[in-house]
Image 1 (cartoon, rainbow, N blue to C red):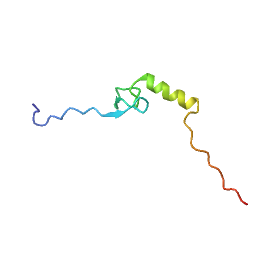
Image 2 (image 1 turned 180 degrees about the horizontal axis):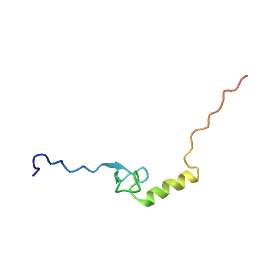
Image 3 (image 1 turned 90 degrees about the horizontal axis):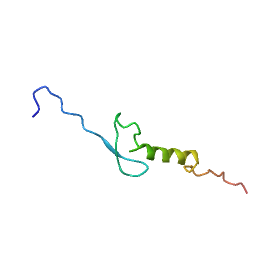
Image 4 (image 1 turned 180 degrees about the vertical axis):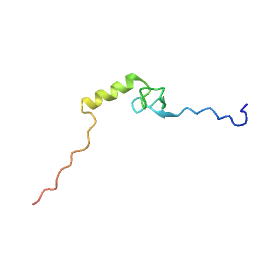
Length: 64
């Protein structure tokens, strides 16, 4: 039971891991946040290094 003047315990915020779509604790205790694990973080880093994430190339309109 909460005593007068006592703060409620902080709630743990969970987000969806961008890699595996599983739950991930979004708090300083999770050094891999927003990822759920080191594995998911490294998979994402590898995808960036391999240039798997790209923006569509802008093509200029051609003048005729």
